Each structure stands twice: as structure tokens, then as C-alpha cells.
Image 1 (cartoon, helix red, strand yellow):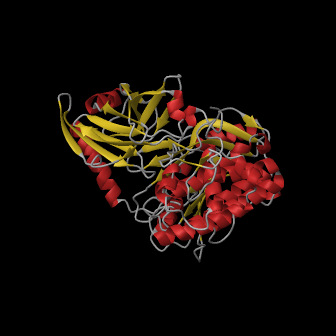
Image 2 (cartoon, one colour; image 1 turned 60 degrees about the vertical axis):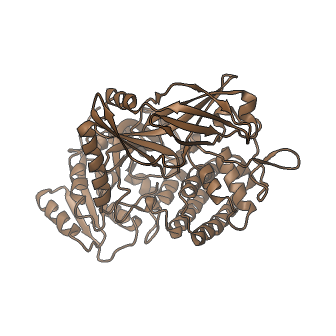
Length: 543
């Protein structure tokens, strides 16, 4: 990495009632080295000790400037705009008070921006789940390290990266195009800011370096905006921000506007649907609000989306109130999607959602087997095995010759799956589909995790891979049934003791925590303690 010789970056840090974390954020910005001319910390009228912490840091760090707002803005846009107003360096970056910039982030971004004369430079970002420390890449596969995107219309998928914090911006470019965040209590302000940036058609330089660590505290007493999906007002704000972003992008380039609408159907809508609160009043309000939000989409917009988003949008448009099988719809919104029976057909024999909502599931007959939303249910069969039930899907698996099934364990930290042994499927003629009893060798899985560097507690997503006689295969996320979710303490010749804790993910599928030996058990206890005690306020941003 080439080091930029001049102080060319202002890092804007926004903070509200985050006295315990803001110091780490500011320190990570100052630690970027001489490339950072100044850190502008905006205290949004905090009522705790945030202001005092910032003033104490400024007293010993001349590069730190503190802006104290007299009145809380109610959002993130206004303090970020204040920070830009106080900035003096040619480039600006943004940092939330509970996140950090990894070493070398600013240097890497500035070097790329100046080398390619790009008004915007972007790098890798990870969502770090705390207290576990698990890193989840943000928009993986969207960028290629070292590439230069001449204009966003050349890559419409860029609309999927709505973050402002994993990028460096040329301040002259922002000023020239009057690009600022929405002021006041505007949730998901990143959506609109990013749309304004892309609409101005900048050249974008991409670096392979990790440039932002986004801390995710799901068990905090006050969760971040992106995780506060139990409030229908949060969804309303997201829909409104999406509409405004799509409008801005569509006026600049129709391709970007449509890509934004497709992103809403394929990403935003399923996230909220699969975590829908069970309260009937909430569901009715959510359904009405979402149907109204879809009015700006044309049929061509919906047709451009993948099957999951396309079918969900049409179901919402077809029914004025939530259907009786709302839980089935929420399950279908999971990742990967899973469509539980019954499997209804229309008068012409085409696949439809249900008799109540006969919305055609277009493309079902020709969809590749690997993309089918196959449903699998799983329950405990014995001490070391699981019984699965694979539902056929409009005869598609039968036609392909469903043959065997095996367990697949995906490490939640990323990496290659650990595969179980394939077992022949047995037909279940009573109501169609197949069953199988799959071996569950937890000791062997723990050993595999240790060999791959997973220390302490291991976390695995469980999948079932169905292979067919025609050579095709499909991977499904099994839905747990019965007493499968009880914790188990198993003797282990290698570790002495092995703690196994099956659990249901937010989307309803099966996952597994393994804690081998004393070290693993201690990690599991620390994880549970941290989740129970976490109470910090995360910085709000879109998810």
C-alpha cells in the first residue's frame, strides 16, 4: 500500500449518548496517521457524559475538533452535515460512535481516489456481531478489488450498497452537486445520501482493504434502527426512504431507478417479512402499509425481480388483508426461501400460492432445481441422528428423481461447509415427499471446527442437501420441530464434555452452537452473559 504524504482526510464522527464507546471510535480515526488532517466529532446534544469524553480527548489531541449541538437533531443526517460544514480537508469519511476504522483504512482509500481521480473510493466492510466477534461481510461479491467503475449506470447493482461509512468522498464533488444528508429525524438517511451520490455519476475506485468495522449488538437494551424491526414505524420510514432514493436514482438513470426497486423487493421486503411480529394488529398495519408502498412499482419492475421478491409483491397486491397462512409467507421470505405445503394449482394446472390467494407462481415449472424453495422439516430421531421430511414441490423433485439427502454445516464465521454422509431418501406415499434419518456426529463436527481454526464456541448454520438422480441438487434450510431445541451435554473422549445447543435463527431455520471442552463451555457462558448484559446504544444505520 502506498502512503499518501499529505493530511487530506476529515473523519466525521457522530455521537449521541455513547460515552462508553465514542472514545474507541475517535481513537481509531486518529490512529489512521498523518493522512487524517482532523477528526470532527459532533455531539448531538447528548445527556450522558459523551460531551465530556470528547472534550477530554480534544484537550490532548490537537487534531480532534468537537462540535456540540445545543438541541438533539433526532437523526444522523444533521450531525453529519454539521461535521461536513466544519471539515477543512479535501476528502471526508464518516464514522459512527460505536464502530471503528481498521488501521490503514483512510490511507488505502485516499491512495485509490487520487491514483484514479475518483470522487468516491470504497472498500470492504464487515458487520461484527458482538459479543461473539463473528464478522459478516457487507454486500459480498458486489465489488472487485482494484477495479474502477467509470459511472454507476455501468453497475446498477451498486444501489444495493446503501452505506455511507465504507467510502471516502471528495468534498468538492459533494459541494458541487449540493449532496447532503436529509436533516432532522429522518431514518435511513444513508439511502437518500447514497442515491444522491450515485445520481451525480462519480467515478468509483475500489480497494480490497477492510475499511470499516460495523459493530452489531443485537441484544442491546436499545437496538440500532436497522435491528428495530418490531416497530411498524421503522418499516414505514424504510419504505419512505426507499421511495425517495428510487425517485432520485430514476430521474438520473432509469436503470438505476429500476435496480433500486428490485433491491427493495429482493432484500428489504424479505428481511422484514421473515421477522414479522406475531401480533395481528401489527401484521394488519404492516400489510396495509406495504401494499401502499408497492403502488410506485410497475409490473415491469416486479417482473425484473427474482422469484421470491416477485411472488411476495404479487401476493401483497392481491390481498387487502394478511392471509390465513401468513406464517407460511414469512417462512417463504427466509434465506434460502422455503415454501411449505399445501401446493395448490389453478384451473389451468399452473402453480398458485393457495386457494385463498390464487396468485400464479410464474416460472415454477422451469426453475432450476437448485433454486427451488424446497421445504424440509427436522426433528430428533435418536441420540445421534435427525429425522428429516422433504416436501415435494409441485412434483419438481419427483421429476428430477430425489435420491439422497445429507446434512451440511456452514460455519457462521464463513468458510467451506462440513458435510455429513448421504442417506437414501424413503418415499412417504401418504402425503408425498420423502423422509430419511441422517447421522448427527457432533463430536466429529467439533473436531472439524477446531481444525479450521474455530476456537471456543462454534456456530453453524444447518442445511440439508437433496441430490437427485438426474445429477441436480438443492440446498434447504430445515425447520426444527418438537424438542429438538433443547440443550444437550454429551460426553466426549476428546474434549471430556461437549455442549450442543440447537437454536432457531431469526428466519426460523435450524442452527447449532457447539462448545467443546472447558474452553468452549466458558465461551458459551461468556456469549450468554454478554447477550444478557449488553446495553450499549449502537449507532443507527440501514441494514
